[in-house]
Image (cartoon, rainbow, N blue to C red; front, side):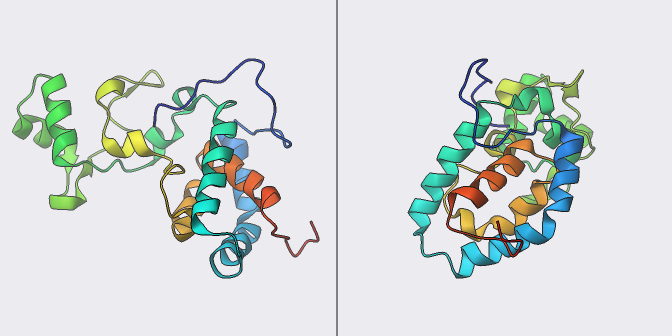
Length: 188
């Protein structure tokens, strides 16, 4: 999880209510799956908005959504995703836990090379609903949900999948469908 803005008590609400409950997000994302595939196709092949403009709108929308969601309280990504690790992540976490890299790898890591990840789900460092190594968390956790990264329209397939578990992604997609000149077949 990135260092997302903390919820602001009296922040202006988006035009649509932000859904924060993970179970509700999952159900609504499943219900919107067909529409989201249609939106992805439109955005990728028919939308005339430039990539930089789309990316800027995604960042702005994401920041608006983040004002209403506490990622740390949610932690669905920590519970559900396979967290990838690189050499720097492993070294940083081993140092924090006072383990050698070999000890840390044997205890917490599966896979080799670029295919390394924590060997269990939920994340072994999710304790009492919070990350016990937050300041030293892996880069993948820092970057998730990848909505500030460039190239949004070319990464949508993965983001649609993640929308089932991440309230930030789900709500950002829902707002984008209203902010861009896309119209669903349902006549919206």
